[in-house]
Amino acid sequence: MLRSASVLAALVCMISPAARLGAAERAAAPLQASEEHALKTADHFKECDACPDMTVVPAGSFTMGSPADEPGRSLHEIQVKIAVPEPFAVGIFAVTFDEWEACALEGGCANYRPQDSGWGRARRPVIYVSYDDAKSYIEWLRQKSGKPYRLLSEAEWEFAARGGTSTPYAAGETLAPTQANFDANSASGRGQTEYKGTTLEVGTFPPNPYGLYDMEGNVFEWVEDCWNPSHAGAPSDASSRGGDCARRVAKGGAWYYEADFARAAARMSFPKGSRLNVIGFRVARPLE
Image (cartoon, rainbow, N blue to C red; front, side, top):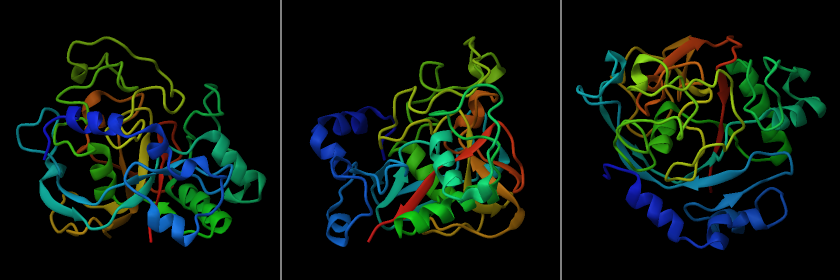
């Protein structure tokens, strides 16, 4: 496994723009079976005009959790080996206010219009959405596309966030304010001083080696898993797991939190009904 993103990033850059776009060059519509079967790693697709942009993440294996000497590590992060048996599709960005509004305008999402803390909407990640709110959006997306959209499992999320690396962050051992939206004034900013104090538009910072934006910082992202105090007993196939289902896992850190919370291995949980300005979500779906 790579210790940094440099090699994978170079490989992604070597893929021609046409190959990277893949199905994104077609009209936005549900994938036909032949199109879905032809998808390759890093291909993009979009299944309706208002649907999230998706990219293909490869199958693989990785070590979930963090080593004992990783700065910022918590006892919740014991390491386990995980296999991701099949490629799957992941939203290139967290779901945005524009995408949420498309759901609400069509009578989905319980017609809920979350507030934005006065920061703006459009391409900022939707906030003040609970786990159940995220599931209501996914139900609309399933009906709209006819495809089995869902949240990522915690293991899938960490695998995707790492992008083939094993460092605390996909970009390396540390995280800079030029790489993500987090509180760099705090102790784990490691001497950096920058705090934006709001969410930012998705895609403001460079993507990780799998072409995914904002897996570190901006907003935490709900995943499917119920809370467990450690990875002991986690499914080895990257599927989601039960546990304390009144609380759900959220990953990725946020604008308000220090860099330690944005590590790929970092874990948080919130009551599933929480509507906060530090939590959003990202979608995924299996591929035929």
